[in-house]
Image (cartoon, rainbow, N blue to C red; front, side, top):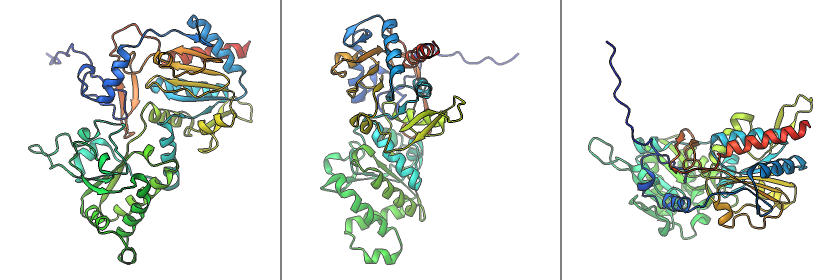
Length: 429
């Protein structure tokens, strides 16, 4: 007789919180304990039912979809931005971009740091690690320049879970380089004070680079004693993890990120070291990965038909030319499709806008002047419907499960598929 499997629990599936880059999956919504998640959940629970809108008036969804498809088809150059959705939504955005010949860029506060990090990666490569690797192996964690827990409140807890318990490695030393007010809570971090915060970080990175280089370089450098001591501790550690938040590194974040990569190169000559940039929330990391899978190019690309007339969409990537903020400021696009299902955010102005997201975009005033705007309601991944998102460390695809327990609007992927189908029908006609 074949052995029987143990009975499957009838309890609710694990819930993955979609509201920060960590995508924590160890707590239910009613007991999340995370201030960012609690705030987002309170807003969702109080949110009214969504209604489609055209130029500020409520209409049936079918009418709004038809108007949106017509306006996008008539555009000379469309921009697809926001990308606040799950993997299926991102895939649908890529397909629509290929059909419209659109420019694609996240264009949000979460997207700019991702683009800056990509520039540094393209120029110098990178040494990155995962939450699990830090939790199991790091004996020295150095957080740089900002409160890395601002966008990921449970980061310290996730990195230190179980360390110091019986049978586990002792807690790693944690040094915060920056202002005292930004020291991560719960990390018991030592402080190397930078009164100027991120503004002082480039000089410190140069000093560390020299100290970790050959002896002749270090001898010529007038390195402060506390920086010299930090370099010595990093050299003596078995595994150094560097944490930073790219959004806090300024408009030219690619430059300090490149210097951090040089620092990691030098550290890896004498020990093991890797980085965990804390970014990619609100669907930005997922958008970058999905677009690269499907097209071979990152975001900040323009899709156009191949010159051979074969109908194949060929993306052209340029991290500067195709930034959403720049294109909108220069009036280089005449239609904007914006998806913001994960976090309510102000939608940029454009002559024609199609906005996809929950009712909070309307009730929170995030649409601004609705002239020329079509609003299409869509659900929140991880609340109204299931799906998948990429975690902060980029190597883990986390499953989402609906936890809202209410009649929900369709997922962004479904709305985008309807738009694509309607637009293709208009083009064929």
